[in-house]
Length: 120
Image: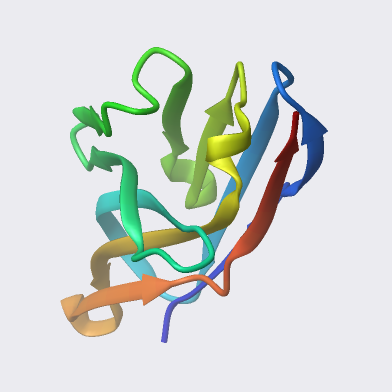
């Protein structure tokens, strides 16, 4: 069973930066897709950024040019560098990792979420 744990959330002021980390543990043969999502109070969970196993990335329009998703396959870790943060970025951020695990069986793992709060 693959588990993912997010770290790095916190309270920052508008304009500042944060870096979130997502570590996947367990038997992992390969990670084929990684993504960050967020959910603000009273809103649905939305995609923030994704990265394929080959390194191609996709960003939501609201974060494009400010956020950067990256990964370290050797450490089974995904990062989200968030720059020029805005109060609208306040949300719980979730990591999702998909890939092949034990016995080459596919897995789809979500973290528990980490709170990011941006004050104005």
